[in-house]
Amino acid sequence: MVEMQEGFVNLWKTIQDYVPYEKNNVSWWTSCSMIVTGGLVMYAAKSILQMYWTRKSLRPLQDSQNLPGPSPLPIVGNCIPLSSNLYKTLYQYVDQPISLYFIASTPFVVVTEEAAVRFLCRKVLGSGIYQKPKYFGYRSSTIRYSVELNQKLALTNEQMRQQEADSSRKALKVMIDSKVSEIVNGMIDAVEAVVQSANGKEQVERMRQKLIELNLNVLFGYKSVKDVRSLSYIIFEAGKEFILRTVNPFRIWWRWVANLRFVQNVLSLIAIGRRVCQYMDSQPCTWVHGWVGKVGRIGKLGKVVGLIMASSQTVPTTCLWLLFLLSKHPQVIEKIREETFRILHSTHKQSIEEFTVVEWNELSYVDCVVKECLRLYPPFPLLQRESEMDDILQDVKIPARTPVYVVPWLLHHHPKYWKQPEDFLPERFISNASHGDAPSDFVYIPFGRGSRMCAGYHLALLELKICAVYVCQRYDWKCSFPQGNEPAMFPNISMTPDNMEMYFTLRRE
Ligand code: HEM
Image 1 (spheres, helix red, strand yellow):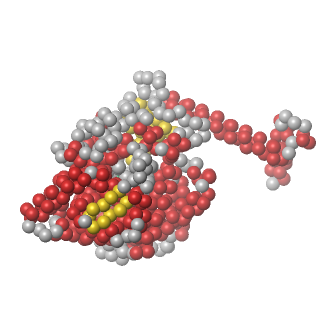
Image 2 (tube, helix red, strand yellow):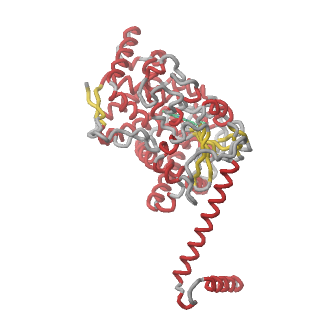
């Protein structure tokens, strides 16, 4: 201890020897600020060197040029443009097969070339040597710490149930097909709740809540008004912060209040996840037991929370975009009405509530409308993977543990793949339901591709189709944005419509 004290005193003296003033004139604060500045300069120099070497090591094999991408700043890399306008920043390099970005000094590459994505899909979006980063697929230390904290607080002596169940994704499809009328009623309930709301803000909120309620019920059989309310808040507030932190981890240093709220939200999400797990354990084996599989307590919690997030964030956001797009295209509404009427007529059914899965599958134009909406506004921003070992992609050496991202929005707006990429043209999916007028399946990926593709896309598509058909049949609605306040070409990072809650109105026809 004494030696340590002496060491500090000596260090302090040495520092004082180096300051350019007379010893007695140097205040404690001046010295401290010089130390901090020196530390920062050294850290900046280290980050510059690190980025320099990374850029050098990530060059194409046959080329001495760096990979394209915005020039990174010392310490922060490309965090500032990425977090202020993610899609705009990435779009600047849309015509480059592989581009390079830095979050602090950690690099990530974005792949946009169809041939590369096609080749990668087995390696990047499948399993192979590229895996999803840990913890719900995100690189968030707050989430990691919260999970670890929760792990310590978790109930002890809980008996893990090791039930045999069908874990295949097909089982989910079978389950959804068997619950079609429940899903139709849930969606109708959601739209009715929206109509009965007092104003635009409340409508958006009710839409979220009702869809979360529906999905918790369909997937887990779980019902809790209180949890639905908190989830609705958590998913949209913390979800946004969550993705912002993915591209800008420095937020943790200057958003003190938001940090506390974020940790609190994540803990509440985990608490809800735990309640759902407990509820699952008390229920007979269903699809969801099979999906979760035989994993430990934390693995199970992770899968349940992942499932809750995957289903709660995406569908309500897409529903809002769908209503917005339809309100701008009355001719599409007419076509939806015609198709619905034709099927009602040919099947001699009175209303869409009587439709079975066969009739929902026959609504091919509505299918195109939903797919086109997901092309323009894919709610999943980044598909993140990390290579487990060195690899070569498009002639570029990718060192092990380099994050490789595929960005659905970027591929869906690529001028090389789509005719009039910014226009809402559902007809483009008529001749080809899987990728529209684009050259291949690998540039239309709202649900991802490969073995880690969205498990719930049947459910999502069905819910969105029900929303479109029911609203077109029964309601007239408006999304009138004042001049200049329309959603911009580049949506925000969480893909939520910015001003929707102020201008969104539904009324009975
Ligand atoms: C419009 C709605 C939806 C969209 C656009 C969407 C999109 C996606 C995407 C892109 C992925 C892949 C992530 C990756 O590869 O890293 C994914 C994964 C997943 N989604 Fe969805 N999703 C939607 C709705 C749903 C719903 C309703 C469920 C509920 C069952 C669900 C459950 C899942 C699950 C469990 C995964 C993880 C699959 C895995 O890791 O193997 N999603 N989703």
